[in-house]
Image (cartoon, rainbow over all chains, first blue to last red; front, side, top):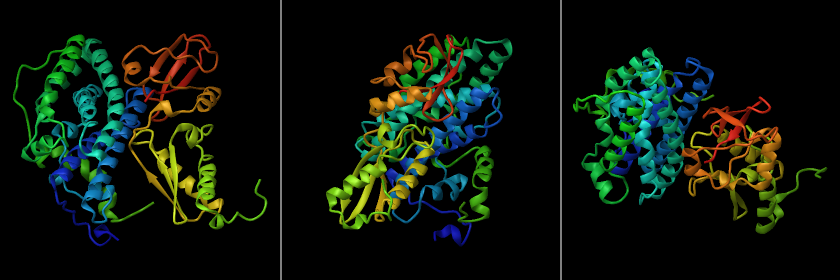
Length: 263
Length: 173
């Protein structure tokens, strides 16, 4: 069996450019999907309980496809589960935005909105990737993201332009999450190489489209975008907020305690 | 009808084996929508035979569709009961599955089952436009979306104002 059957020691991944690229996107999807799964049984109404978990399911599905591809690239007998369950927080490459706690329903919706408004055009652009596997994964993710974006947009408007209470909560969420949106558009040297080769899409090229989508909905929701332009960063390099460690301790508990357990 | 022991697929030529495997695999139903076979859905993409081994190619509907694992298992079991012991399942992502692959027969079966079928040629245009979905029970177009996300990844929840019944709508994808 794999290393998991002998010890709970975390794995390390040889991060070639394509591996790192796929891990970053897989981690975004897994962590956000896991966050949404935490709403199961707790959402404000049954329809939303189903919606949030459905979106979570799509995201975890995208993560599985990407991790499976990483395992293929590594070729060392690992599978999707190895990456999800056996890496420490510092090895996770996700955006800080997606690991932020669920907070109230407004915060979960605004977080989803900021992410989906980026993921939707991003995956659509990635369908033209020179890497056939990534293009195929993008073609599936693109269709799913469109539904996620529509769902989140409608809720941002409903909450912002709703009652005094829902407006205040949505406004607080926008202000709290805003500093995590800058990271969406980052590309380091490794990723810039992939962009040059036509494997990856330059996230910065989507900034204008994202800003316009956000501005339209924020206006319709009678909310205010923060004036501050200061942005938090670090997730892509494994420098995370304390929240990720807590999330992983729950997500990884079983495989870390009973290595290789199957059911 | 099979009355005796499972036929020995091992003696069949490649073309007959391929045909038998297709016939058997095409009868596997979606565990969440049991009126549809995986052939109706367009999930079954192809069968290859090489050196007496059967390879079944399937494609997922949604990335996270939990029915895929079960469908793969059921194909293997169905092939095994038909005497095909040397078989593997391959999942391909490209070209990405679309509701346009749903057969006419499949759309009719969905409607009869109480699920409004997706409109052909839908996709993004319909997604962000205004959708008119006919109630699968009474046919009225006086219907409203209750929730974008329904009982499974592929469905939305609607309600008919004419007959007052809620119904599932198979989303365009």
